[in-house]
Length: 262
Ligand code: NAD
Image (cartoon, rainbow, N blue to C red):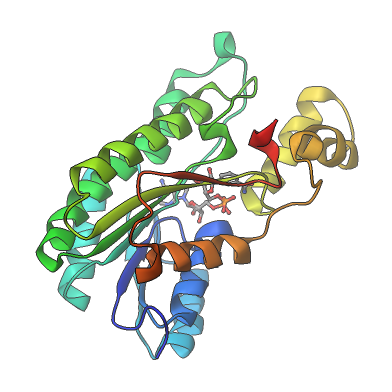
């Protein structure tokens, strides 16, 4: 028996990076898992098989573009039909775009806000009736250190991640007496494909090497000068989903090597 045996977890944007790390940790803790990205692919089929070996075949794929509300509601409905409920929701899908505000493309602003913030509203709205019926639930929003502090050129991302913490607090207050918690995890730099793309973008923006971007740009504010790991994110998500964390709600927990302590 794992710590989360019998629970059903939907993890958005979970075919790579932090989402996949959390999905793996949930499977290892015994939860049924709904993996999500825009579309099924040979890679997602392989991940369903891999996690299924860990949690006894209780991994499925839920296709949904998290920027498209109707697809989010349909995915949650499918998950509930398949497993009976949704107990744990991790809003992880996210994208980044880096540009000064006066040059920020309007379509990129809309896309970042839809994918990183509105998606969490829609999935929360879809899952809350199921959690309320079960009188138990866990909502974990993957915000960012950029949900607590800002950096230049990331207007849409920083606005969305700050907004996600606001949404977390409101959610927590609304369901505080119903056995459901809502918390935000605020990672500093975690080495994932999203960061890999930023290394190249920043190298171009600053005209410096990838190595210098890592040491002098990305990790310059992360006092321990180490990337956090997807396994650390998974372990925290499992803890927040456990009964031991029942009194932790409405929080924004930095996992950033001390970044926001500055
Ligand atoms: P990643 O690019 O590896 O993963 C992002 C995931 O989101 C991918 O699986 C992608 O398929 C999915 N996704 C993107 N747009 C989607 C859409 N429209 N519909 C469905 N899925 C979509 O990135 P990551 O670094 O693992 O980031 C995961 C989350 O963690 C993001 O919200 C990101 O902002 C946040 N975060 C990451 C870091 C970091 O250092 N990596 C730091 C702070 C916060």
